[in-house]
Length: 384
Image 1 (cartoon, helix red, strand yellow):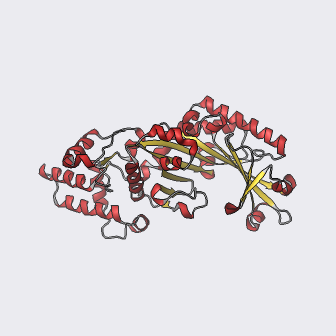
Image 2: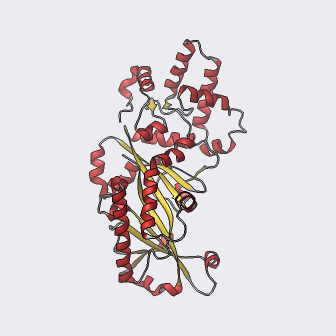
């Protein structure tokens, strides 16, 4: 499953002289979402675009316009694969440049017809605000998916980024559970890993895809590139233009593998993740070969601390904690292990780098199998 642009978003400000607010009262044009205080354009749900209109609050309005007129902001969320008529799960259909260009052409054609039918110009003077880059990863089971999400929360090791809770963030799907998602944000992008299989189970549209997955788990790695990133890295300045928009989406698609590594791999602890029992056996083998002994005990204690400390505390106070030890981190990196250990039923999980590359550490996987052979009937191994 390759990386692809799953959705992108354009926003524009809509002064009252360009929009008749009486249109919002027309049931054939809009429906109102009370919880989020927004209007959604009707009749285009399956086309690949979703247009949402919000009234700006006074402070926001005063920063943009004079105080005499009511103002609105309209956001158009685009799913390229839907524009081309694909089922939503097969979004990587748009990983090819010619398909991206075709999707963008369909977008402009569709919004032109919306303007003719409703008088609402979705894209005129709109700016590219966000692009979501996605990679789906198969796992052996939902147990593995859960452990990877849990380990990711402990593995974020860059203090410029902070975990956040989907339940209190308005940009997140409200039914996501904390145990099913790991999210963090910086100034130029947000990132998340979530249980895509559970997400699919809440929508009847995915019944065929769920049946095809059988007992496998499915994780989605997703990066939301924000306005500053798009402007600085891809020249997304000013208003979106027809040709330029498709060129930007093509460029982001080409860069998607490196973006995944930049936004996930480089920010997480390196090395494969193993259970505590396998980690201990691995240290014992090192000791038998005449290597470190007291260091191994310190590493195991260090691993327990990193694995079980609340992640928010871990990320904000690590240097001040007496258990923090950069030397031990270097040791873990040298032997190819993450300091975060996982459930004993998941004796080996690839590093985040290997996971995104579809690779495994075969020697370490075999070691984990040998170390757990007495309990093999209770264990499922990494087999995807």
